[in-house]
Image 1 (cartoon, rainbow, N blue to C red):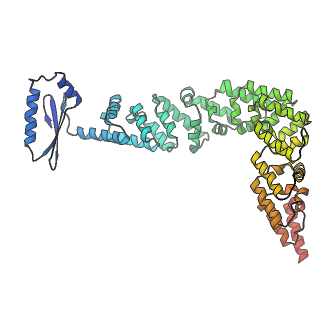
Image 2 (cartoon, rainbow, N blue to C red; image 1 turned 180 degrees about the vertical axis):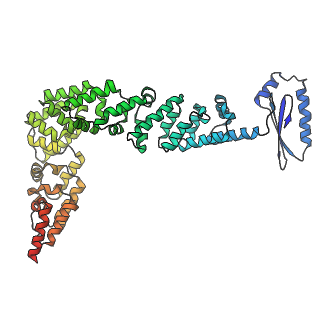
Image 3 (cartoon, one colour; image 1 turned 45 degrees about the vertical axis):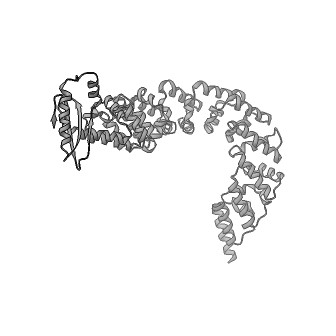
Length: 503
């Protein structure tokens, strides 16, 4: 180590020697330019001989570096500094950006390079790379040295196995207060303890308002909320609707669940069924739910018990617009001749009718009228209820398929009246069954008019199996109805009896 009173010079020896580099850092240059070293001072006179002496030593190449210091610099400091700058350069920082980070967190200079490298590797294992890693370090340089963050990083990497989405990890690590993060660990462990799978914890946390969960919900609050929902589905409801964690138990969840429970006649199991089918129902206020219940009671003439049975089957009725959907749909049923008991029976079987879009229903109504249904009739309404679970496109293709096999609109109407589901079956499945009926069984398509329910049986496990068994016992002329509707036990016994007779 070479020590000067104002300038320290460190030398690196390389082979072969070819050049000399003189570097005056900004601080030294600024001092010189502002007159800190007068022209007559010994700074220039001392530096020049040293420089020439260096030039005369041509058998060794010198890298000559001068900097203004107040104390000696260790010989290894250059290596450590260069390694640190190299690490930041690999992350994506320019030299001036690295200096800004070091200025914001001077502890990085004195920290172990291995520890800093390990922390960077941990962040990368959490899928924080490239610009995201660079931005996070620039915003929160204490991430590289904070001992308090060790348990947080360990939890994310080891316990959660790096399952959280990178964006979520970034939001968490940007939290300034370490105590908040330690509390977050407890909350997540509590959710996992109660049954949230680790592979779903990222989904749950990404769906909540994170700031509320971090700052406004204590571990005790979350424990109370889970315990309250336990009789109705507990953690399963939260897994499907994570934002429930942000709700206030006393002012929101408790009165809403109580309303549904009162509507059910204090039936906890039925209440739980509603909550499990539509956890989002807990996002509606008591006033909103009550207005829908009262509308169905007054406009459709339903009882409280009947309203709950519809809600139990189709909780989405609570989220359906009263004026845009409920009112015109119920009015349509009245025009078709339904009274209150009839409406209840219809809506219990086809509740989706209340929620479908106007375009969806109008297209289906057009197809039904096209094949022969009459306006404002119960038959039309029942047919509408039957096709609520299929798309308009599938329904159109199904009608076209029947027509391609020689069935007229009148035939399709007769089949639909007898077995309304024939218009809602999947097109591809129907095509396979019709092909098997005509090509392999050798039957006429008109047989469907007598037994359209044939199209509802599974092709492989029922139709093919029964038909092939009958072929073995020479019973291929059995009607479709008898072939498929007899019980498996009776069918098996009859097949054996026929086989014995034939022998």
